[in-house]
Length: 302
Image (cartoon, rainbow, N blue to C red; front, side):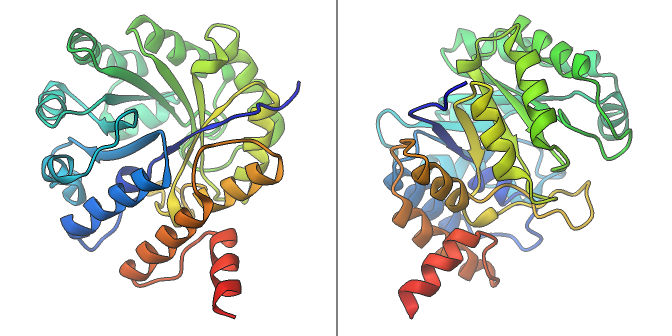
């Protein structure tokens, strides 16, 4: 199959990228990060999370972040909402899209939220219904779609089952997420083909972690399977608490460099993203994880 001519990049660093940082990232920095990403031209930014501060202290200032960002017309600002209370926060904050989530692994679901996959997604029924009634987009994220830290392999039928359940909730977009970064291209093609058999591939996105260095290859494989939406995180921000040594999300700069080399349009300013990646890495006191970003920055400094 031919590659897409245009790809939508969902930038997840303000939420998925920062949520596991041990030191609290100041609200001013979070706001500036979202604003920089907006200016860089991302069509969709995952800006905040409305979860209990008890569970994710880093995201406790979600409402303030959403109140202070400078919004660009046409840009979707998404927030993670685990329950009705989270949805109330999302609505009050003027979110454009909510993100709900469910694992394709029974072991992961039981270990993390002490219930089955079916039960976990059923809990989102009132959330999705209320969000749609309020005119918000709903995105369903299928975690552990390519492997689980507890059970290992995840059957493709399990991924399709979760996709069907999210479809029944009326989701607009479906994330196939390699939560621990164990996926490889052949498996990615097979999983994407199976999900595409029941859902329009134009509504499916790939969310890849780079734990084993396979993320870019997996994105290429997903594009060959007809997928044109990908989640990335500037400077490779975001670790995975379930995989020891995991490097987290694939770096936006690396994905943009790949796509540029394939003449695939994203509408995103690569140089602005490199600047943002270097800026946020410096604030966090470490070198960024983007090879392309670091290479460009080193070349500029030479």
